[in-house]
Image (cartoon, rainbow, N blue to C red; front, side, top):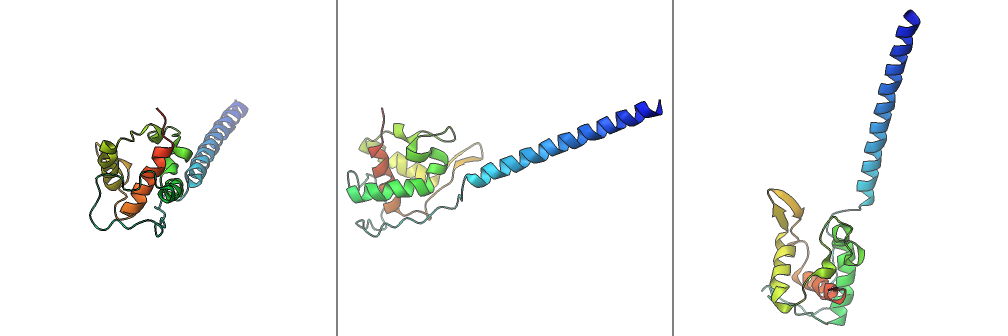
Amino acid sequence: MRNQKVDKHNKETFTRKLRAAAFAAGLALGAGLAHAHGDVTPQAVDVSTLPKLGEEWRAVNPYRDNAEAIRIGDSAFNQNCARCHGLGAVSGGIAPDLRKLDIAPETDEYFLQRIRNGVSRNGAVYMPPFEGMLSQEAMWAIKAWLETVREK
């Protein structure tokens, strides 16, 4: 009878340790994935080769079809947006697929409002605001690049 109690105790102890190890492994894996997601601090974008836009925010993208802005926008997107919106703007499900973003000039203001102010719903932040972290030039360069990867 005593051996049965000892066996049962050892089995329960082993089961608890196994669960704890599985839980720890899950936490480690989750932490590793979070770390692999990268540094979420916005990265500086060098826009020194683009025409300066000044303090007044534009309502329409002044860099549409500008090859230099598109080059800068590609890099800026990969540094600041791809973590959530995916490389090449191909979403992995975390955030909207920006290849489907409307490129009509009338929608430029909507795009700028979202990137400047971010997106929150019911107190949850879905996208942080980038105003004060990215310049107007960088934001419009990103939009200029996004227009080149547009899919219907």
